[in-house]
Image 1 (spheres, rainbow, N blue to C red):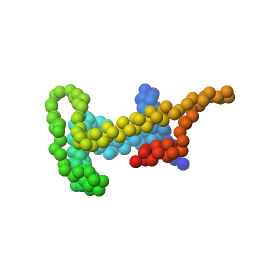
Image 2 (image 1 turned 135 degrees about the vertical axis):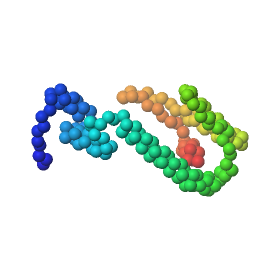
Image 3 (image 1 turned 90 degrees about the horizontal axis):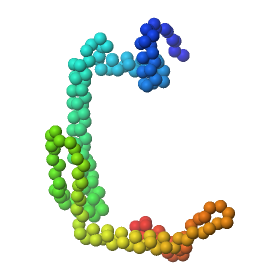
Image 4 (image 1 turned 45 degrees about the vertical axis):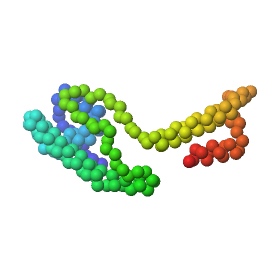
Length: 177
């Protein structure tokens, strides 16, 4: 069990601290610990002017952020892309890397607008996807045509699917492909 001691504070300061403590943590002791840790970690003194030290901290954090971005880019180049290439080769996709159709331009002092990026798909693949989509639409409309509403004299109405077992097995097999 922790020992408690008293500290004398002005009433106005104590009221501010209590309000602040409710936002930050569960107890006043925890809040005070967090405040002290903050000042010690960042090397601030409450009597110092924050302008210079905060700018130094921002610069230090920016360097850390840039270093982490560089690490992530390196990981992406050396680990992720080769792995993706191996997986695509394994599943039979082409390994030819196409140059991007759209190159991102960076404009200074202009508001960012949402841009739509166009993607291209080989024509044969597109036609196969269209054919599969039409097939799925036809199957789904067939299933919907075989749904009947059953009115129950007790409780809620319910839906009955009137398909035989062969049709049900066929639709399950199609969906698993």
